[in-house]
Length: 268
Ligand code: ATP
Ligand code: IP8
Image 1 (cartoon, rainbow, N blue to C red):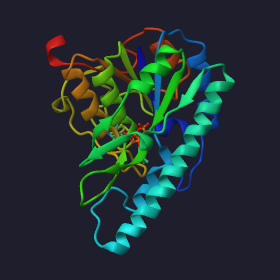
Image 2: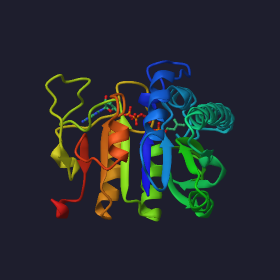
Image 3: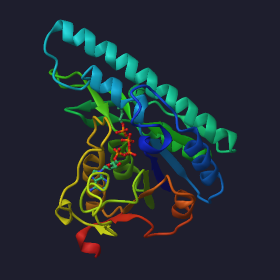
Image 4: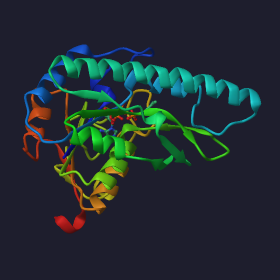
């Protein structure tokens, strides 16, 4: 089983203030997936400009100040949830056009968080889809939270990857983003940043930050935290540049070391 995350920075124009698809990247990636070989595949995609700007504008997932603020955040929740659902519909459509049996799975319809971490999510349906030969497609979403102070949370695709990885034990986890992998510092800010081939701890880096664009879920920092947690359980992952031709295809086909590998210290 392979779990693939396609970053919102790749399939949307993430620096746009309004939802904007990067249809060129999305159709190329859909073709690459269709041309590669796998047994079971789960796809998770990020939100990019379909989720982060509205989540930020309405401060969805932040502490509720009063009744008026609660109402406003609920409106922001609906707007964000609908927008990422629209992105997901397009992702599934592009995949299906390439012959992939993509089925949409809406995280907000079955996931609950407490203090922004997943506590409830029944994966039986996803297993059933996989067994029947479908490709489930999940995504970063706005979900209900059981913490009385926030009541709503922004759930990143990266946390979904961690949860699926922990519970389904895939053979491989691949993350496609808009950079070649993890650098010792943000490559978009520091031109002399160096690409790391293997990361086993946050201490391997000088700094790891959010993205340069609006991002409410922690950018590369959030991603690394989730992937290190998987690494501790013996599940290795690789972050690569999905903006470059054929890297997704090569990774699904089994090639390693084309980005940054995140693995546990004990396996070095
Ligand atoms: P989304 O969260 O919308 O799905 P994504 O998963 O593709 O998007 P981001 O969350 O935007 O990706 O994170 C990638 C960004 O992280 C890069 O564009 C880069 O600017 C930033 N970044 C910060 N620190 C680092 C680092 N040390 N190495 C690599 N990238 C970094
Ligand atoms: O892009 C964020 O998911 P991510 C989800 O994977 C929303 O971090 C709704 C902003």
